[in-house]
Length: 236
Ligand SMILES: Nc1ncnc2c1ncn2[C@@H]1O[C@H](COP(=O)(O)OP(=O)(O)OP(=O)(O)O)[C@@H](O)[C@H]1O
Ligand SMILES: [Mg+2]
Image 1 (cartoon, protein in one colour):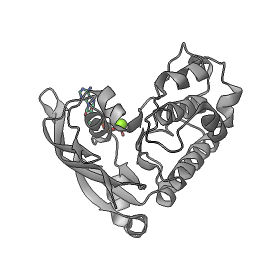
Image 2 (cartoon, protein in one colour):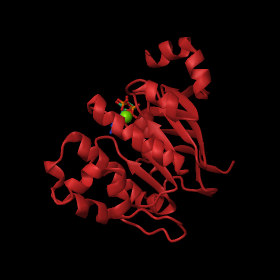
Image 3 (cartoon, helix red, strand yellow):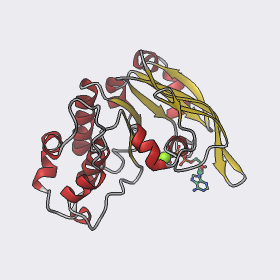
Image 4 (spheres, protein in one colour):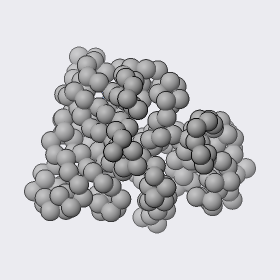
């Protein structure tokens, strides 16, 4: 297995308050990996540190074998990590189509690059809304657009931070179905989400974070079997 992303001994925080105490995780090519944990445990801070959106104080972030620690965000994106950020953040004054084109990046070596046509196949709802503005979309449509924008950068790794938060069960289901399709196509995915059940089906490996450290990791069978860990760390 080729290791795509490797985070080791990552330390970070805000001002004088430390949040990450030696975070670690690994995503191999084609794998779907989760980062689980209760509110405020440091999941988003980890993602922001990987993406160069927040400085890390110590540690290592390797992507495709190269050190990307504290590279500027646009460089991290160019290296091939696509982020669906917490809170979606689509451009409100651009149409769906303009939102999609805005992030498009033809990272040449890709055999089957993401195009508008492929995006509209994945999320037909976006095709219907293609000329609507970002601020005219439902929460679910915005989330589909946020996922699609990340895909249009043709990433090697897709990171989703709470992509189903605030969505109805039906719309959530659409997001999970899209992720399952992406995974089938071999896309590496790192998912942060509070809904454990669909992730047990989707993911190959799970990491649980508690107070800025990994306290448990294993595959879906191990997590299913470990009611104690689920209860203690996830309340599920
Ligand atoms: N910009 C900031 N300035 C100061 N403290 C922050 C900032 N962002 C996050 N924190 C604090 O850092 C800690 C970790 O936050 P983080 O957002 O990484 O958690 P999380 O695991 O993503 O939580 P959630 O599940 O609620 O999204 C929390 O105590 C939070 O209050
Ligand atoms: Mg968060």
